[in-house]
Length: 469
Image (cartoon, rainbow, N blue to C red; front, side, top):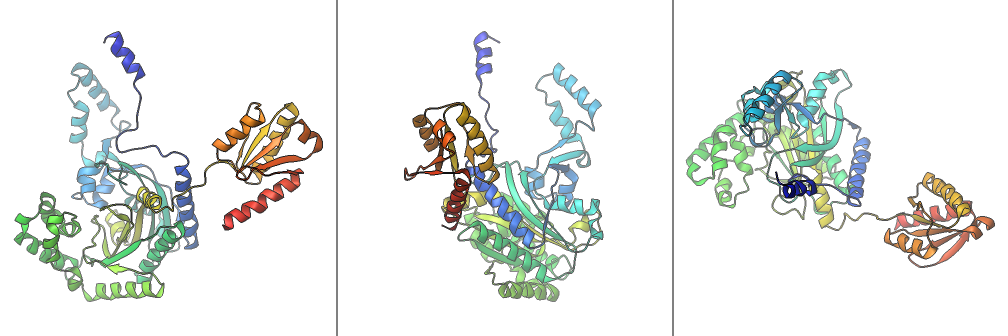
């Protein structure tokens, strides 16, 4: 390597990997506000927070989500764990040093069975069910209500509101009776959250896809598959593949050319068994009782194999064609599929990235920037007083900027403006001697002198007025 090449390598600037990004202040304030609203709203419905591992056994998602789904077959980050294959990895590294670029590591990963791999979580419902089984949560009072928030990972092409590392806020109800009221309440909680966070134009769509009994969804899937076989040559490659792997997913196609064909396909509502019809009718009745507005969408099937009966989706403006901001549904039988006892389940996941984007597009994503108070001080005595003042103001809940070095007052006030401070607290030898501190309202230029207790009272009063506005 030449000296010029070596220097160029040294100067290379690192950037976030494609499909990931840094979320910076002040935007993080909006994220915090959204997440805090979730904490508050979900708690009022009796939900507790669960914190899950970032990675899980690959087999967990393959079994729960479905091995033929795009998530598992195309999008999941799955890899061997070096802790379990130390000797093997040492040999692979030795081979790579002998024949660089031969791809031995990737070959080993492909040869290992699914049960020997771990995956960065692409979704969290399977993880919640795993935790429910592992910690014997069926022994707790039922149903168990939990919510989560955090990053998920999928290997897909980045686009507006969609990333390879993305964030979800979700909730699950496990156990308890087979009651449509549970479905209605979890949807009510979701719409309450969206209202509190200020999401405008949100539309709730619901459907029932029946269950796996012979006379319900299985019978419908057979009729759907037969109908699709007749128009197979008019469908795209993905839909053609799904005829064999998961015919229901064809209904979810967004290809314009396929829409007239899909419109002619059998409706699942016409094939529900009496039990599923009754369940769906009661869900709709309870939503009406709760004042939750909805639209029915017979094509709404959701993309994961574990869904059954109630499915729902919320769309929001400002997101283009991929406008879903949340999806969920019932998944009775998933816990049992993963080795647990027969357990009812329902939940949802909110795409937090898309929710933030929709709030920003609608103008509801504005965040408060700047500081409450910038302390402009001059002199050693004033600095000691400034430290004391900053401590008291922060204790009272105000954001304070205390410069670490002395500045002339003109420069300090200019810095306060740049930081978006509401007030400048001016402290010099005169203020310290008098015991009266000068507070300048930067938006108006008005100045007043206060004793310390009066200063706090003034700031508290004006903060209350600002919050009311």
